[in-house]
Length: 323
Ligand code: F6P
Image (cartoon, rainbow, N blue to C red; front, top):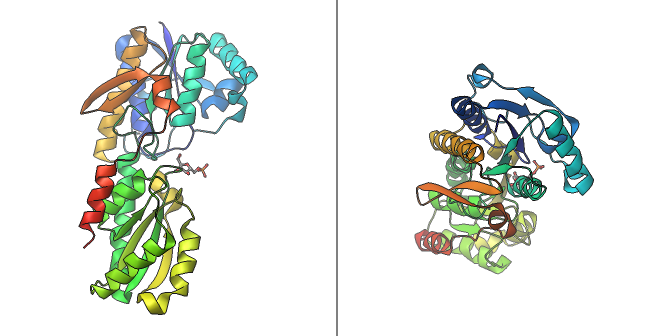
């Protein structure tokens, strides 16, 4: 293998830049040329590609976002779009590709592998919903951002004796809500994977009031149904009975930005470097994950076919801590 490409695709997160840096510098170490592909699969189809050297990735370890840019690329979901991508890869003499991204991006990597193009994936999404890895790049930084917000909201919630609904991202996964709720001492966490009724939530708020708590914090995953607005309406309508008035904070895209944490920088560097080793060593159609404090190399179809399950023990622990 003489020349490898690297792209970031799908929703961004903090940790993509350290990963790009690791791919480029390990590529240098392995003696292969490195091509940076802009705007994910959209840029691959359009041929937005430049050579990358050690200096091109200097000073980016601590920067959020991705210097390569990212995009969602519906055209790549069609066979015609993928054929166009293969033409570009041939035109630029690229022999192997590292794809850094979430579920959709890794599915794209698997499709290229099925078209006989050597491809290795790296899990990178704040949702932490990818199988075969304990954690994806970007999760730790997002969690710390959420935790900082929960701590701040607790200050104002306690001063005013209010209940707060804090909505996290996560698409269909409750991981971010659960982990931040546990670390932030929330009274309740609402995840799509666990059924909770409006009455359950109202009961939690009422109990917190009766126990003499100064606030009630409920972390709601964006994928939880019937949804944050519905629960806010219900709690507000029952304010007299429950004791606390309610406010809503949606954290939104703030969760995807910011300087990557030490954990994310190290994880991204290790996974990026290992992905290059795997590609140069002749592997394809696999993801480099991180399981039980070590690399876990697994077929991409195992990583993307099923959504990772929520850790029920962690959820049960969060319910015990709510006293
Ligand atoms: O997959 C990452 C994620 O941030 C999800 O948590 C969220 O549902 C989605 O992307 C938001 O996507 P967009 O930035 O396109 O609105």
